[in-house]
Structure formats: C-alpha cells, structure tokens
Amino acid sequence: MNEARHEGVEFSFKNQVFGFDHSFNFTYLSAEDTETGQSLTYVSNHSVNWSLNKAWGDFDAGIDMQYRGDRDGKLTHLPSYTLWNLVGHYQATDNLTVSLRVENLFDKEYNAVDAYGTDLDGDFINDEFYYYNTAERRLFVGARYQF
Image (cartoon, rainbow, N blue to C red; front, side):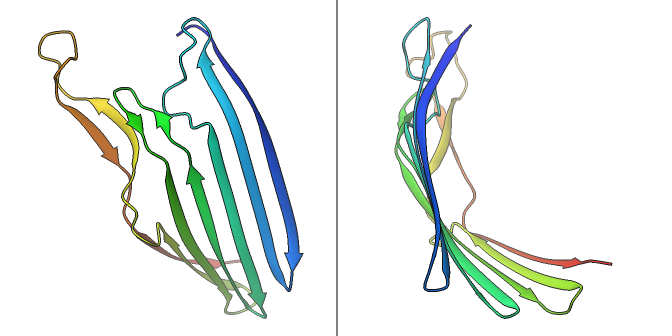
C-alpha cells in the first residue's frame, strides 16, 4: 500500500450529573487504501468510549466501557466487541495513593487481530491461520508515593 485515506467524525461529551463525572466519545472513521478502495485491516468504522467516575473524600472509583465495531482482518472479518473496566484510587496519606484496576471485567473473549500460519504452497489458501486473542481479565494494583 502506497497511500491511505482516513476520513471521519468524532463527538465527545463530558458533564457532571449528581456528583458523577460522565465522559462519552463516539468516533466514525472510514479508512481505505486509495489504490484498491479496500478498507484498511484492523480499523473499525465505529468506536465508543464511556466512563462514569465518582469521588468520596479520599476515595474515587469509576467504570468505563470500550466498544470497537467489526472490522476486516487479514484473513477474516473480525466481529465487534465491548470491554468493561473498573478503577479505584485511595489517597492513603498526603503522599501515598493506592490504586486498583480491573481490565476486561467480564472476561470477554475477543479477537483483536488475525494472522497467517505457515504457507506451504505460496497461495495462503486452505492454510492454517491464527487469531491472536487479547488478555483475559487482568488485575493491576499500584502505589504512588510523592516526595
């Protein structure tokens, strides 16, 4: 590919309602190879991000959602997926913050990319190929100390 065109529109909204911080983002993107007119691989036309956060004194917590629309892979059409994440922070002292984050809260299985396996005869027809699954549910714990 020598040249590609990306065109789209993005809408973002942030507001506070009943003490909760809301953030919403929607993106429509058209991405294509200008020589062939084909969609670029792994680029979704639609994506949505949403988050809801709340602070209570020294503690804050939030939930966020990430949606990626279906898209073309190298070999197959990859379906859309939605992920949910949780995050929390606790200001233990003036200098110490403890954090917790759970990514892929519902342990969603999804395919972000696909790839060829071994091509035996040079045509990649009826050859094995693989999906690279992304991470399962993950838990992150952290601490930050400011001097």
